[in-house]
Image 1 (cartoon, rainbow, N blue to C red):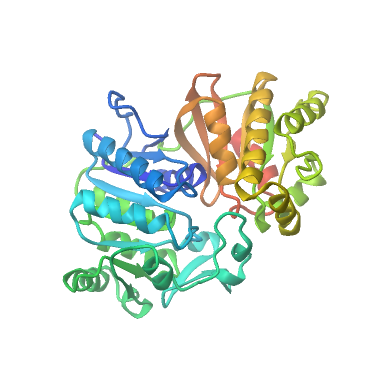
Image 2: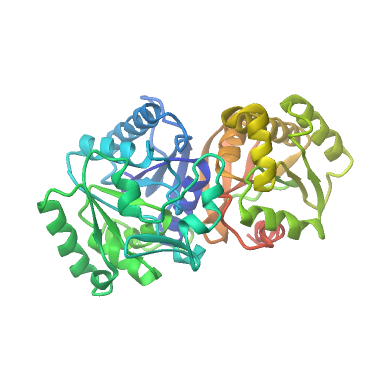
Length: 424
């Protein structure tokens, strides 16, 4: 029986969380979309249900999240985790607050912590403010995100605008005193009628302490970082054995490719780094605003280049080009154009023998996985913090997939990914 049931608001965030649990020794499987009522639970210690709900209308995000929770409860999970991005991607309408409110109501627990900190990827929360490296969230580039621009780093205010409840802070001065102090602070806030506590965290030690303090919580919300303390809770309770092979995946051979749809600074830098070492095609959606035409262009280019070395196909663009495309087509139509093109390219590449595929960007990853008919991902070894290789099973051939959040990974991530796959 699975111990931890997780609901993630996008596909890359789901693999990010799953990688953290695997590192803690939990055998983890990611399922794509809400399972059907008759679907059986995979043989795993943790299950992550990956939704594409981060930018959905709030009512749809709530409905899908509640359906995922109901299935996870049905298959016997003991604790639940709502995973969102470490940059708290959302708007004043949601979807973090509305989904968390609905999950709290369904579980009847009345309270949840919220902590998106992920120090390994330079995300920290101090005095309730989210930092990316040394920059406040609203000065990190996230203020220019095409779908969820983050213009306020104060998470107490941000979440407060999204929820019908009240939001308080567990400050760093409390967190550094350890799990007992954190637990007492959260208990006090719950007794005061607060629905959420933003919990500061600057180091991994803080996250381990927060995880221990939340061992009895029905629901935890946050980025994947706060999950690092959860496996040990189950181990202390005698529910999780020590395991050394939680990240082992079957071997997969075939062509290798990268598809990039994110416009984040990190992904743009990774494309630039790859350019000197691999064949790179940069698609221009502004010049060719037609998904079928972009797909045909990319596959024609790939036909003569697939071989021993990986190729990179990118629909990423700097903020000014993204803004121009959105002005021309509208924000939603521009996003759909890129997602549809990359999904079609992925389908064509797999038909041409690609079996190891990296996808950069949460929305792009969701579109690709759905087009390829992937139903389940077994989580393997990390390439960089928060980005593992996964073994994908579904309606097509078995694949190794790495679904990368746009903001994650070192500059050489695209090159490093396939070296890690070959060494696994």
